[in-house]
Image 1: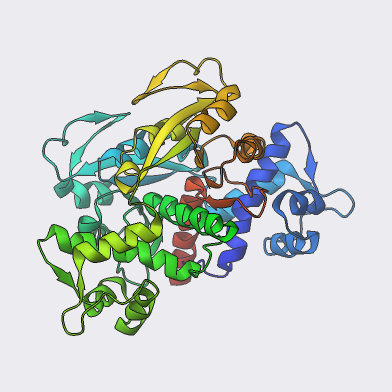
Image 2: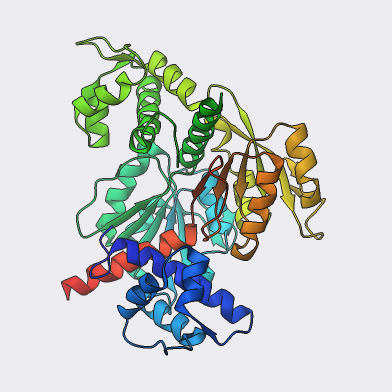
Amino acid sequence: MNTGNIPKSTAHRISLYLRQAEAHRDQNRTTVSSEQLAKALGLTATQVRKDLAHFGQFGRPGVGYNCDDLIQRIKSILGTDQVRPVALVGCGNLGRALATYKGFERRGFRIAALFDNDLHKVGKRYGDFIVQDITKLYFVCQRDRIRMAILAVPAHAAQDVADQLVGTGVQGILNFAPVTLNVPPAVAVSTVALSMELEQLGLAVRSMQRDRQ
Amino acid sequence: MNTGNIPKSTAHRISLYLRQAEAHRDQNRTTVSSEQLAKALGLTATQVRKDLAHFGQFGRPGVGYNCDDLIQRIKSILGTDQVRPVALVGCGNLGRALATYKGFERRGFRIAALFDNDLHKVGKRYGDFIVQDITKLYFVCQRDRIRMAILAVPAHAAQDVADQLVGTGVQGILNFAPVTLNVPPAVAVSTVALSMELEQLGLAVRSMQRDRQ
């Protein structure tokens, strides 16, 4: 994934700093130090300071970072200080589960529309949404300026839907199908294959059991 | 993740080969060649042959791999030729969504029990399950020989529940909390932080938009 001027590893840690800063704030603490962030995340304080220096000088020596300030700056970098609309394509078991998952909205992403190509599903309600026909994808994404999408379709359909999403102007796809999507360089794709994660974990468990025998 | 004798990158590709072999079988094809596998996954045929050679000689030159044979061998390696029970801890939005997700069972993993520490949730039914009190975790995991768990609790509770899971004898944890878990070396952890995935994707999209300006 291309994250512009921020290296991918730094970008990943920034999401973790955000969650730590929020946890400190939720415990009514005003500040959090680079040492505290480092300890919680298994990093060095030097690494934390280096990462956060990407975003200007705002920590105070001996005091640390103001939690609200840190949260606000990170959200501004991530673009999650505003809520962005996301299209969800595929209303199978996983798609429906994701449609009703509240964790995205809290993080600055609002599922704005659900799509499926199965006429038995089109028109049905899941959570707050009525499933729309995939043929309306272009119209809805253009109208609502949707630039991100969640792809929860079967593996064999994923590339075709990804092509359609790219055609609508979507620039980021969170793909849950266990396939490698071909998209133009200007489109970011992140793949999360849940069953593969569990499969790989199962293999690791088996390997460790074998090593002990 | 430690996968014993199989390098992690190979292990990941094996999961992908499995899905490709299944797709070929579902299209009533008897065999799949290393060239076909390579093309579908953006690899070289040499890489595919090298990976599959880990598991003995079974491809036939000029013909390829018998799909059923390849599927059976990979499942045997992954341990998904038998169904393994998995405990799911945390019945918030994500946990409930995962409990009703059918994708795991098809892949050799059966959600065997749901747990929560919220007495408002204990006793409620989600999908095929009644939520059990987390205090029963040890008893149920021991009784049902559960060695894998899905952790879908809030970040602040994740380490404590992970410790409890390790105490029950669980050897693999699929963690959905956006935290780094400390577990003994003999326990495998894989973390999937969905909101972080979307956040990172959003950042990539923003970075690319900035680059174009």
